[in-house]
Image (tube, rainbow, N blue to C red; front, side, top):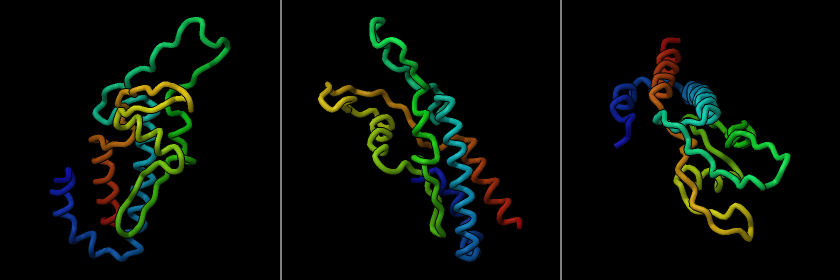
Length: 149
């Protein structure tokens, strides 16, 4: 059963009364706001439940010198890879292209090879996409604001 089931049941009549163009505008607005929320959460390196991401594995001291590592998923959270789409049926925030495989490995903690001929490594679970209580409140407020207009 979906977390939104009680909320969806109460507002289904109001949403159905909207025109398709109105539902599309609402969905696009929700998708954009949810993408911004997900980007902020990924930047702060937190899972949806508020726990921090598991740290990267420490590299040997004599590894490559002069290499500056940036924070995890810095490029993935850009709008180039993280897309927000809305239609009159729903709002979607998703990763596109080849990065979907990388995201899937981290989202579910799967095994992957970091290099083409490298050894398979088991990655810890780092949930990139997920709902928080703030996201739930954001959706509710967007919906009520849109219906009030």
